Length: 462
Ligand SMILES: *[C@@H]1O[C@H](CO)[C@@H](O)[C@H](O)[C@H]1NC(C)=O
Ligand SMILES: *[C@@H]1O[C@H](CO)[C@@H](O)[C@H](O)[C@H]1NC(C)=O
Ligand SMILES: *[C@@H]1O[C@H](CO)[C@@H](O)[C@H](O)[C@H]1NC(C)=O
Image (tube, rainbow, N blue to C red; front, side, top):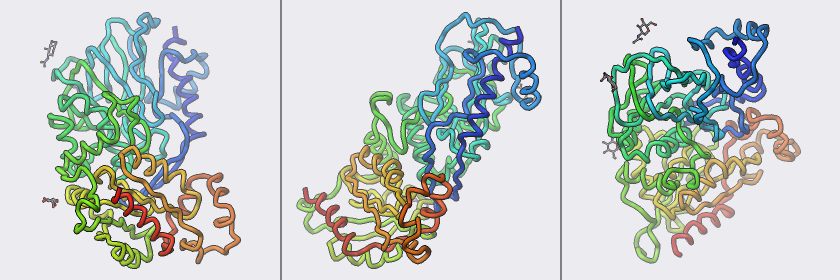
């Protein structure tokens, strides 16, 4: 009997070993710092407790129990799983665990529980942090953990809802524009859009300023006032509940897996409609010969700055662009910045969160990503290159040479920084980040970069 009861422990221990092995730390400071996580799949945050795991002997149970006092929410007599329905939660995607339930579902903030009320005890219990970047790092532990379980027993409903609910956390890396979109807004679109507004959002780890910042997006996706699960004292009852958000890949959507085949093109169209952005296509030069194509340069300040940005502006103007220099800080008023981005035909900047603004560009516009020194091409493609293509943008990538890097004044030419940047990647992301991301500026070679600006112009002529 006891072995069935506490099968939980074994999976927990395995998970914590995996946790130690695999978790990976990256820092982040609001908009000015940009983060990428390149560690492959590690999944310590969603712990399957019952069901498939092997029973433990009583001794190790006790050991684990001592270390793990929070982990005994189960009550009543447990029985064999005689009801082989589909599991409440699944871990099909690398970053986004997802629980989905139909039936009599009760959400009780008091116990952080989401309970699927069932006639027979199935003994299923999961712990979930509903933010789509599992395996990320320490900050993940700050995200509120919810229990998703089946039970024959549950508190009385104090509020009945006829619409489905989506439960998610707005903690994690929110505040960094890239993470706002890749971890939350794109997954939220992917999960919620199918309900056409008839869905109730329930949020944990509430950050009011963040919700206010994207209020238009929330309003467009849900017709109902958001419920702050942290301060709520009701027992909410639903017939359909989703915990966590669907997520496919960085800043993008795989239409093969998305409801109704949603794609990033649908997402950017949704953003343009949300922010009432007018331009659905670029301005072709032949059609409007007297209108200069607009180039937006995203200029970072603290790291990965373009040192000779004035010369670039000058050169671009000589080529016929109307140039706007923007800065991620302007994003405090996202409506305003979105309008500005949408008015442009080309957006350029060094690899960093500011490039996320491409979601507001009209289709067929061009993104130019400047890749700093340090073998960062793969990350550059994953975070912005492939997403740009998925958004139906024209994508150009410019890798700087050693001579264009500020590192040349820091390290001798025969240093591994120049001779073997790959060796830094073998030693972990932290080192890559401090060496190449946090302490490097670029000084673009005017002659080389001119060709890229030309190519972007050509794309407006076809
Ligand atoms: C919530 O928890 C508190 C203390 O833990 C308890 O006194 C209260 O009755 C609970 N409320 C409900 C609705 O269960
Ligand atoms: C919610 O619905 C259940 C089942 O229909 C009903 O028994 C209960 O009284 C309702 N509760 C509220 C607060 O409306
Ligand atoms: C943000 O910008 C939009 C568009 O430029 C403007 O209408 C709105 O008043 C601004 N909001 C705030 C809070 O400044």
